[in-house]
Length: 281
Ligand code: PMP
Image 1 (cartoon, rainbow, N blue to C red):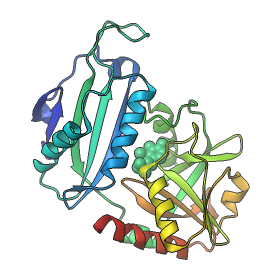
Image 2 (image 1 turned 45 degrees about the vertical axis):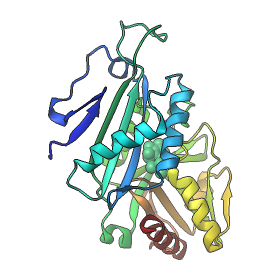
Image 3 (image 1 turned 60 degrees about the vertical axis):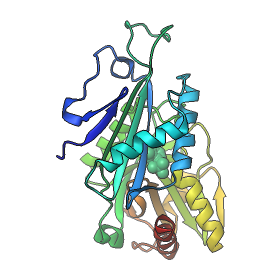
């Protein structure tokens, strides 16, 4: 692995040298938030939206934003510039900081700020052409899924369930209603309409949520945010997942049942092309 330059609490250093104290509340409690920003040709894609979500996450858990948007951009830029890859995924994490272990917020504490970047590895053309398989599972996470929390145990267990099932992603349902993947949003196409679950506390609003909505508007594809049943997911003409590192991926098999005609559909093809145009614009 390339020993990338990272930013940690005011210093730029190599990843292998970066250290945090064991009493960091991120380590002790998972008390922090994170963000993942895709970079194409050394340009951050939808940076404004990612920054806005970072600030919302900080706000939601009462960590004072340690930097202005401008400073964040400068720090990220420096980490990006030092990396050899043109296409990257920037990872930012802010925890409440280091303090004696006690659950409630410490009085005086400085947030821990960490920035790293890695090469962006997108699904191959073959994977996109074939489509991927997913499995369903009950969503047993907490009820603040709108916060991009580093406490990801529920998501980790969902991802492991997918890995052990030999598929790409777990698609989660809460009491029969579609929520999201272990690290992706889920989209259902029926009769030419693309639908996603409402943007509420039960899902993370992916940056691709707003992007897909915009792309649909531009291309005259009807878009609906509404509650979606498990039956509707299985009866979909097309099913897709989206995330920074997957972009949009067609799902053609769910729990060994074929979705639609078992091949990536026309709405996927259209949105994928629109996505590629948007990221190169
Ligand atoms: N939901 C969850 C739980 C995720 O982890 C992700 C990926 N960060 C998403 C949705 C998709 O978000 P984005 O489009 O910003 O990558």
